[in-house]
Length: 394
Image (tube, rainbow, N blue to C red; front, top):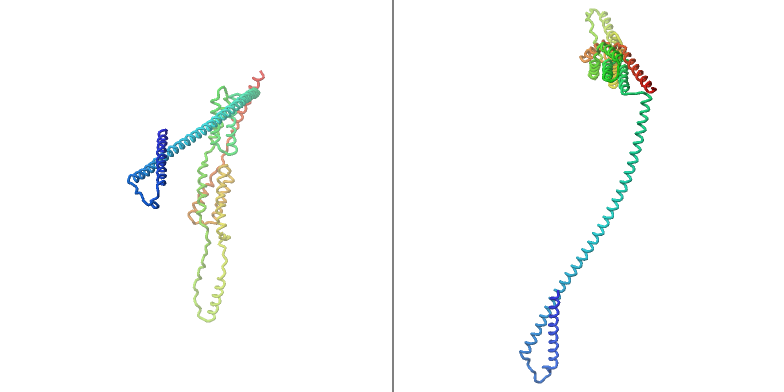
């Protein structure tokens, strides 16, 4: 930068010198007489013209040098300004980054402080809750101990209570649902509990359970599932039944009568024939009973639905071992089918035969008395409770 300044100053000095020489030469020419007014004009010599041309060239060179030096100075100045702007921008950016870092650091510190405060509060609350839970657990344990002491309950009592519950369910199966198989499974489960219980002597109870199980196994076996699925098959056949069609019987022709010979006999025969024809226009026939009217499609649909409901009612009676409902439902189903559907159709015959076979089955089974097991388990429970109370009083 210093070198460029020195060169610029040298060029400026040279340029000033050139301008000074040009001014001096111009002044010299003005002092000389004008060629147009002088009587003896003086011709310019070649040396003078050469000196003037050299001065002009020198001026031009100086101008070019000044322009180049000025451009170089301008470029250098622009670079310096750009550098200064860049440095200022970098400094501003660094200041902004520093400010952002400071803000983030402050936020981090504030967040850490808030987290720490929240953590301390939660820790205090957790400790308080744990303390409260421990106090409540202590109180509950004490209350349970008091209740256990008052009732005298033990592990054997709970096992006997479970056995008593199973035996009570088995008794309900027998009395209300007539289900010996389900009652046997419940009684066997109760016997297993009593057998595996430690410290329980229940010979009478197990003996009563064994007797009740044997009595239930002696009940006649009834294929409830088989009957149920047969009735379900009948339900599926209801829509396939063909509606009964009325049949009209043609009147047989009378025996041919010999044609009479005379006119009077012919007139009598003609009158009789006309009367027969008139009376034949109206025919009254009952065919031994009341004629069943043809049902319209809507009523036929309801009829089939009623048949389905009747068969479902028979299934319900089967499951409840109710012979009256079972038999009545099947009988009404058979009567409706016989009245409204084609008796000669193969599907109708198969359905009627199946209903007749099922109706002959006796679904009522005499259930034995299985109350002995329930009485024995209740006696055993009462004895355990009595022993617990005595231990508490001592």
